Image 1 (cartoon, rainbow, N blue to C red):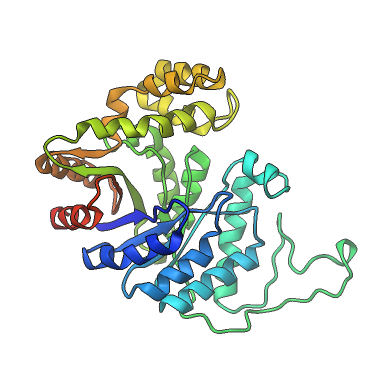
Image 2 (image 1 turned 90 degrees about the vertical axis):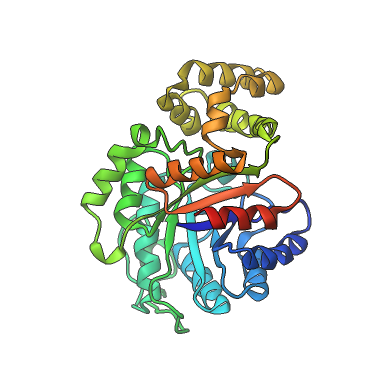
Length: 341
């Protein structure tokens, strides 16, 4: 099992990136960089590549709507070259609020677009002339442009002709596609004891169609981390984030996070969180997050307890444990977890 974390930065990504070198020394194997509508991820990932030697560096996630498929492939190839073959391309649909509000493009066909982007990226990395017929049409048909477009191949030679692709997926069809086509899966709010109830069928359906050449699917999951004898109160720090996603990320009937928590068996609580959040009562929504949900989605407690949680994630099929250290000594916390893997 690999150990990973997200790069946490509050204003100054340089300071956070410099700390990653210490985390690498503590045994960290991979680091993920988010992109919403703040700083872009690839710039920070390039800086990380210069400051580290061994860490795998991934985007979690690059929205599929904000860049063309060819540019996604170029970006990943550039990061892979700078890092000496350590890049991971994490993709996801993001959401309509960001895609349409920030990027100004329609939020449509997320599943078809993701599938085609994976195919196009691999075509680019193999340095094949880029021809594709689907939602994306390459070259652009003459009637939709100047008619001067022609099939092109990547000018430079990438370090690897297959950079690992990870997909952030929650819905059944998206999870099945991820298990079929991607090197890795980035779930959200993963409860190891109940994950199979939510995603088991989708993972099995995708695995049945998976090319053996891809190797096993890398499942990246974990949660907030704090190891100590008096730290369980830190689980409450997850309340506002869970309330935001379950209550505020989407309208009623169109919130994947609400659906996942409901399928975990917390349907009544999910409805209450959503009602309160959409009514503007964010603190009450956070208070309504079940204690059991907070506990099962975290690694917070004494060392023996955290060891048991790691075993639960392993048993559920997680192959990369992704943690967010909460205490002031993240390097020591990461080193302790690494020794428990």
